[in-house]
Length: 140
Image (cartoon, rainbow, N blue to C red; front, side, top):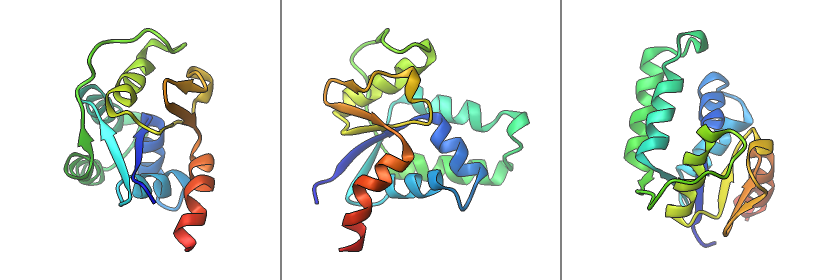
């Protein structure tokens, strides 16, 4: 199987931190495991850091630090070539910029309504859709 080039929206990472047995935790672990490759831009990583630090989420400092260190160590960083104004929520454009720079196969999000169905060659999908795509390959 060829490497899957993935970008994760912040809501996937936050859900992975909040629900250890949840689907998004599985998606995060898949994204960090070969043959998948998780791609981040500095702006996406900064967004992860900021949102995971929100007091109302009550994510333990140690868990937050471990997660960010894991992402920093295992993800592939890219630098987008420019800014986009595509998504219905302007804050979400950083994920399309990252996907563009990474030539990502998939952008996984819990808010598909904020994004187009495709951006160039990147398909925007849910966590469940990703599991449906990679699941059969995990069993072989």
